[in-house]
Length: 309
Image 1 (cartoon, rainbow, N blue to C red):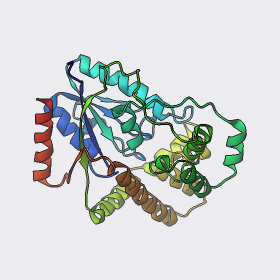
Image 2: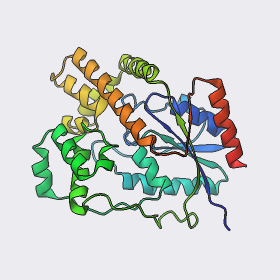
Image 3: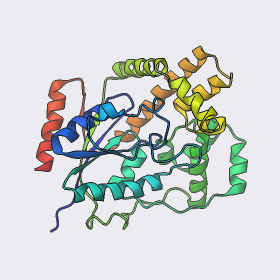
């Protein structure tokens, strides 16, 4: 029986240090990293997404960062899947280890499970009707149509909510998962090791807030202002990216004070982190570690070594 390609996945909530740990693992196993983050694919969206810097990469190749313009294209999970499969094949062909790292559970599952995504064309009339509704109204609609999709979506992102409702209305809900023939890496996808990074809630809350303040201090607001003024990304489009981009865009338009922006954004990032936890906790195959504990990190690295042998 042909051995399946091996794939390491490092996942977890926002602000848990996934990128740094993935680099540590990659240095040990001759790995290359594929980012699984729905916003880090966009050029110029760096501080707002917590994108890893060249210095932090420590020479480890990273893929699927900065690949599309935020002004021109909405990047879908199907787009991610196609590109990720291609990169995995390239990495394996070099006798190196592919490592998927990120917090977008929908993207990770699309590769690990080999989901086939339905081709549902845009419904202009439906989109116009849904555009009149608020994000909370859209989120309530989606929960009624497809509760599973609602568990892993930014409930304030109208663009994604409208598209999810469009698919759910066309198909009833996302159909049962099938294995994609696009993979072409063996008959039954991968042998996968999943390592999840997690902190106690009170510590993660503090990490989220401190990281938010740090990103604002080093220029996150200017980054978003430049995306609008220099890259011609509309306010509506920036708001559609959710979280940092939505709240800072509202602040720059004078619709929120700086204090309101900070308070609302901190709260929304925390709620997002809780949704991430809910999504990942369904998977019983994840090895969970607290990355601040040496014993936990050693346990994870030992599991990596055993997996690759």
